[in-house]
Image (cartoon, rainbow, N blue to C red; front, side, top):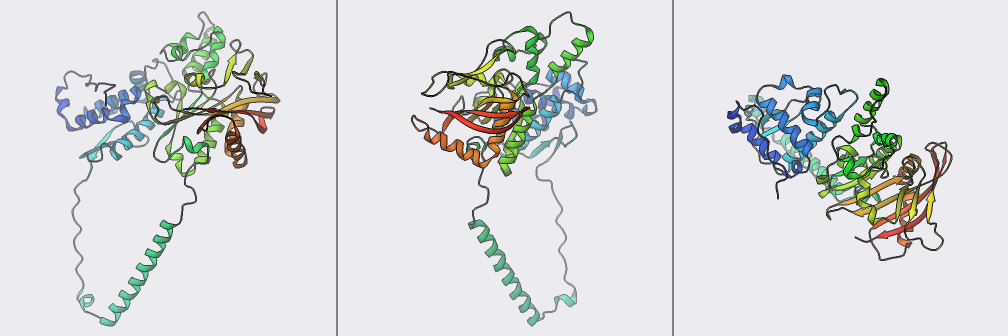
Length: 432
């Protein structure tokens, strides 16, 4: 494995003895493990928390201080409105659990972050426990009672047989839920984590400068602040600064998240939810992904645009938006235009796409609507067994070389923003 991040040394130059501390050595091994080589944010967060915990400075750890030091938040930011630290600490707990369940299962030390705290706790993997004293039989209990002993042994044997029979039956009987239903079974799996990337509503600020957003621009550290024009009234500028700095998403995305958790059932524990702004390019090297939103709210989907037949086109920032049919088949339109604005009544369009991951590791599902109404309609379709069956039938009937990957254009009828029906308009197979 090639090392993507170096293990940082503590900031306090006077604490050179810390390098030999077995707790810091453990942290170094964790930072060099696969789960932590995929995320610079978690890499820096664990280093910072470990340094403070080992040097006895845990009392100085606050959410605000972590946000400023680790995530480069402005000094005046509000942790109550920006949950970046809390989100990453939850992810850090999961990554630590993953490390000790796999690469670090033989470590002599363990480290964890108790819920409600930002302080690392180190403890032995197998603490020594004093053996319980053996129970000494009382003189009366020591006296053999042959008949009673035989009766007890008989019923013990019967009970053991019953327990074994029940265990065999349960093992032989297939479980009621083997996994997520198609097509979510391609991205929600028991042996692989799925990251659900929701849209970033702060991108609405691009309308202020009438500037189209590329993924490269979006990934620049100062991008969100660059969208706010200079020389604005103080109150207005403060509002825009709050919007740009907060992790906001849409109601349609929340509906989709709820649907995924419901349909995944027991596999819901494999889902990790992330804002588009917290994703890193290295994260895409492996694992399954579900991207929610179109390029105007989730720029990450542009990485897969060249593989899709139905592409979202926005003629001007905040203006007319439609799906362009790159290669129309007989009976299809070249363009599919939906609602004029979110929350209105009429037809809207969305696409659901299943593709292979960029590095050939894992699969990617994209749920994008022209408006939020279309995205919400997709979540309603995935939640309904009969709608999923119709989608599967349409994919199987579609022309082209058989492939597990596809994209489908879906039309929804909405009443004041609420989808009341969905229909599959067109399907394309995607070749890996």
